[in-house]
Image 1 (cartoon, rainbow, N blue to C red):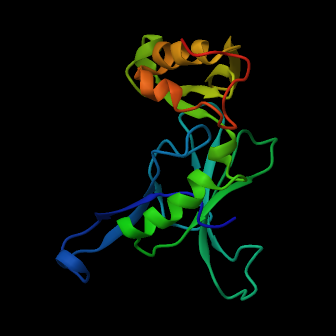
Image 2 (cartoon, one colour):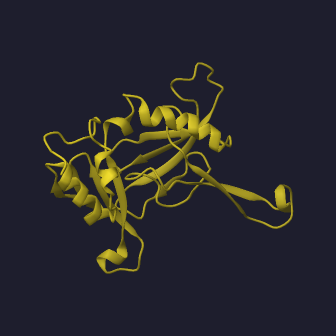
Length: 207
């Protein structure tokens, strides 16, 4: 586990006056809009060990400020985001981060490895996620589940129930699925961009 995921840390005022920039006390929260399924769908305060229930199903989240297994200096600490899908399942560590601020130039270097290394998840897998809101189920708008395209399959998870919506046999079917389920319409050049990549569904032809 290393720096493989980007998160936002948001500091909000909790009192007036006192110390700190702006003259008031602040509290930091993890705000992560990009992890996808099993990611935190609500802000999580940077408080070690506090469990936060998800509004989706029985999943719970937490942050822990601890050393990683890879640390040879056990005095070092990072924030580790973990989740478990139910009380019967084990906690799974998803990613780690520090409170060090990164700049655009840093992400350019880090994203190069993420998008080009053969062993990278994002090189080996095509992955698209959209949150399902309660408005789609006739409710008031809160998150209730996930819509996921992973490889050649589209699934929908509402609460603890997962159903397969489509199994895709060709790239043409996957292009249609991206538009149908996620509202993503690709140009002709973008459709060709997957040719000869590991994520391409083999046995199809352009045109």
